[in-house]
Image (cartoon, rainbow over all chains, first blue to last red; front, side):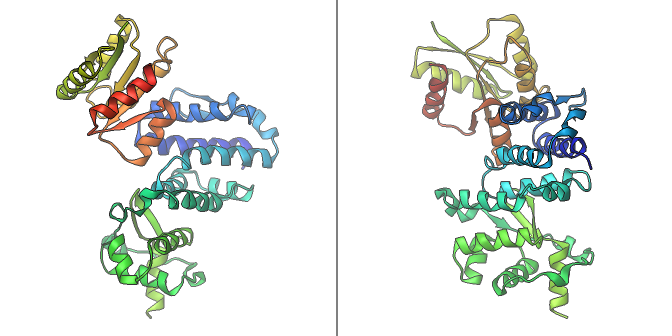
Length: 230
Length: 123
């Protein structure tokens, strides 16, 4: 995938994620505002136009950029939105970007040096230190039972090594809908330990966000638990 | 001269509450109402630009997002400060709204807080 396809892929994904929450024309405005705010540092961003369907158009000269410069610009674009999103919405944002991106875009931006995991850790630390993060009532962890019964086997499930407490959390989530207070009491852990576990499980793709305050088991997690109990 | 605040909301009670509240808290404001995005655009076409627009998001017809996009792409209107005023309080809406307009107030709001936010923008 060349630079143009890669940048166009990530901007299209960002536009679609934004449009889902706002509207097509407002999404274009959000992305244009982000590009304008970064074009002093990355001048090539000022060459990006939008077509009448609100889709970004990246000019061919972007292919002349080195990978490192492109990676820094893409990371800055993602960071600008990500760091403004509160708590779990931030993690959900990465999931949404991945869901909307054309196949190959996310693996390739990782390959050229965009560190999404580092962004997630930075975001987690940022919101962990905020006082309103202690409001456990706002965090609900629910499992969609219908998804469990219709799950597919995941080929990489044998490579996963969650901790004992993480396994207990997964088993708890598999049994019933729980909120964070119930999870804390059942596992006898602190809020920060629970937060860390959630991030680890998200990074291991054992949990995923289904909204900005709800997580559920992935098929990979369901397969893992099935194999563990065999 | 009074600062002109355009409130765009499909709920007339909200417009009335803001009008009575702000005009009672200070004689510096004149509050005008529009019941949806189309009315807002009509008002902007026909009148002198207001000093601030309070914009609801969920409205029939032209919603708040599309109204904001219309305003921001117009050379004559793009500098008007916009504040989203909405019950839609998810983090995505706040963040995306904030990137373009810079401000977002969640309903239900406290009139005194609304007054402070408005005065910090227009005065």
